[in-house]
Structures are given as structure tokens and as C-alpha cells.
Image (cartoon, rainbow, N blue to C red; front, side, top):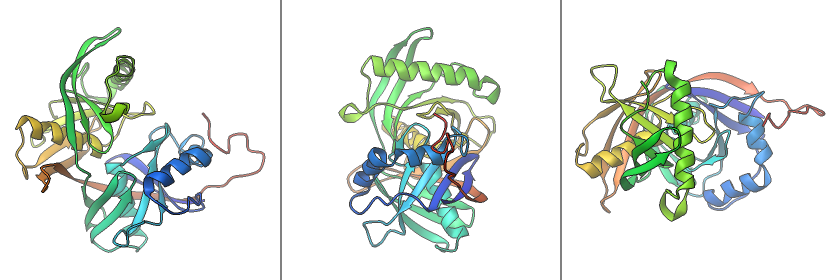
Amino acid sequence: MRVIDSHTEGEPTRVVLEGGPDLGNGPLDERRDRFAEEYDHVRRAVVLEPRGSDAVVGALLVPPTRPDCTSGVIFFNDAGYLGMCGHGSIGVAVTLAYLGRVALGEVLLETPVGVVAVTLTTPNEATVENVASHRTRRAVAVPVPGVGDVVGDVAWGGNWFFLVADPPAPLTLAHEPDLTRIAMAIRGALGDQGVTGSDGQPIDHIEFFGPPRDDDADSRNFVLCPGNAYDRSPCGTGTSAKLACLAADGALPPGRQWVQESVIGSRFTANYRIDDQGRVIPSITGRAWVCAEATLVFQPGDPFANGIR
């Protein structure tokens, strides 16, 4: 299986170019479901140890259904499948440019939750115009065993987030174990108490916010992803969910830049527009670099060929 690895502001993306499963035709969400039902061993083999790690996001390139799209993309990680991935979309676009498959300018990627426009301004910098984002609940108080009441917003930015403005610990790598442990407890409490996204969808991302370290930034965050790995980047879908909350509060007007730091100090620059239907459409700018080209080998008899669970 041929793959190319990149990282977007520190967060890795592994693009599967050749040797992935044939998912046939049809809508991307149906092909994602087919991937999950029939070929989940491929997901595990690509992103789990010993070939991957808990931080790797995979991106399977598939033929798009729309002729204006360069490629279809199904994103996945160590826990399952993602509707969209902001850092991953930048990584895919930079990878396609590295391969000479696209030029600078706009690239349209079809995902299971809609078409994502990525504009390459340089071979390593791109702006993602994400899917429509929105907040569904504001200031939800959730009792968390061992932690106490935690207040946060429920918002969609391509994935479901619970956004907490009062972080339980300083947003530094030194406090990552505590941040991860508390975020896991919050996610468990949300599920136990029936706090969900629309149509009962589980909230699988927890996001803490605090003041930035740099004077020219607006915020610093820590994001716990579904497989309990923290996001090294500022999280594209998480930043989109944050913009939706700011817009709903009237705290950030359309077009004004929002600079979001990650827990490792990398950053995205973001803004949003309002479309004809009154929806928040975020744009996220970040950088990505290709860091490896590889062929994944599957030898007969390997007890961990499909990953270590």
C-alpha cells in the first residue's frame, strides 16, 4: 500500500494513494459506511501501531461523485471514521500539490459531510473553507465525577464538540496527562447524561480554551480527539466550531481574523462568512509539510498486520 505522510501544524495525516480498498461508487457517506463494515481492518492497519500511532489521521482517496471535485476523501483515525478533518484537508491538498496532481489555487475535495474547498496559496500553505458550522446548545452544565460541574457549548464544525472556556489546567504539554484525563471524563459524562449533538449523535471531541501565549493570537486550545489522542494542531473542525460559537454570541463579526494557537504553539488563522441561508461558513488557514513517502508491507503470518488494538 503506497502512502504519503505529512503534518499540518504538527498534526499528522497519512494519505493512502494506492492499495486501499475498492469501495465502489455512490455517495461518500455510503462508501464510508462500506469501509467501516467491510474493510475496517484496513483502517486499523494504516493508523494503528506498529505502522501508525494514536495521533495519525488517515485519508483514503476515492473517485468523487462530482466532476468539479479533484478527489473524494474518507478520513479515519484510531477510533473510527470522521465526517471531515480540517488539518487533514490541508494535508491532502499539500500532498496532491507535492505529487503534481494540482496547481496552486482552489482544490475541491468531496467528503462524507459535503464538499470542502481548499485554496493553496503556496505549496505548503492552504485555506480550507469548511462545511457550515453551528452551535446547538450554549452554557450546558454537566456534572463530571471527580471533577465537578463543567460548563460548555455544544457545536458542530464538521465533527461534534463540547467547548469549555474555563480550562481545568494550564494549556501546556506539561499538563497534557491531566487535560486528557479530565477531557475523557467529560466525554464520558456527556454520554451518560444524554448530552449529544443533533439527532442523538455522540459528542466525540472535547475542546478547552484559554488565553494565548503570543500577543498576536486570540486564544489557545487543547482538543481531545475520539481515540483519546490530543490534537497537535489547533484543530480545523474545532476552530470552526469555536467560530460558530463566537458568531452566535456576536463576539466576532464576519471577516475578522481569529488566530488560534494549539497546545504545542502552532496556529491557524481563521474567519467566517455568512452564506445565503444565514449559516456560518468558516475558513481556516494553516501550513503542512510532506515528511515521508512509504510503502506499507503486509507479510503473511504477521500477528499484527492489521494493527495493535
